[in-house]
Amino acid sequence: MADLDHTPLTFGKYKGQTPDEISEHDPSYIVWMYNTIKPHRCSEWLKEACEYDVQYDKKSDDDTDEIF
Image (cartoon, rainbow, N blue to C red; front, top):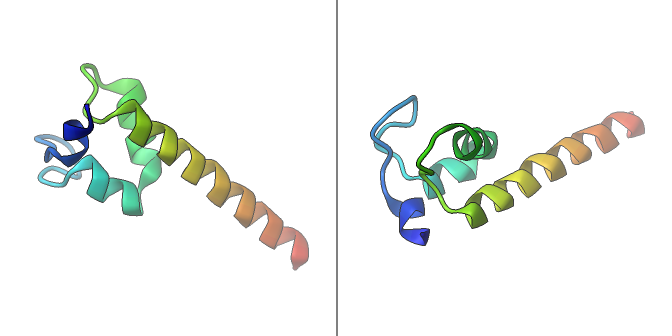
């Protein structure tokens, strides 16, 4: 399944980019894509890593707001 992470998408705003490339700058798109589009266009592992990134980034932003 990891081959999916390196297969360029044939649709959408990231057409021509691989899920692995997209995950570097828009992990929420990977989570949305995995949960919405069937058959899956990326591995479950990549989706879970992106979920973590999205959650961690949100928490970091919240923590920064409390400091200021």
